[in-house]
Length: 218
Image (cartoon, rainbow, N blue to C red; front, side):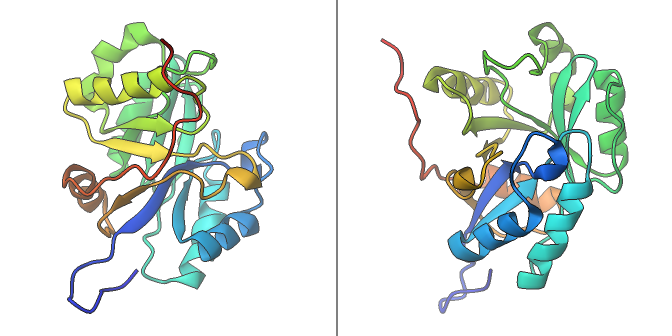
């Protein structure tokens, strides 16, 4: 998280979707997540289900390892119409509100709205498709690769969707188990604010050093 000898910024490896035990369905203790970063160099954003407690705990541990790491409070929030992720929050966002109210609260805190696993067929929690066109303007980032999506075509559809609406894309392991930590990431320039993150995602430095778990279906 420093400069190289030629004064160019090192790229960060960045996993924008990780869960801790605070989600209630994850085995990842905050200390495990911080240790994974120490070993792999893949920086995680913890976005637990309907709470920022895990995000706050892991962010605290990460900044003890490297004070340059930005403090990002995040949460995967269930709305009445499905899930969205809030990044750079100042406080927890209540669950089960109307999607438009949830997005307004996130933006009101100066945060970013991330649209997770848009076309993952096995999740009942994914955002209802009939609402997407109505709220697309308020979505800041689309998750273009999710490590728990089974079919490669569903991740490809997410990336196509992001391109159609000119939205930057993220990569997330969606790790709920220690063995999935640090497996999937993107690379981008260092940032410290929501504006800088959006710029980094759009700057053409995003890379995919990952393999789809399942090939495209013929």
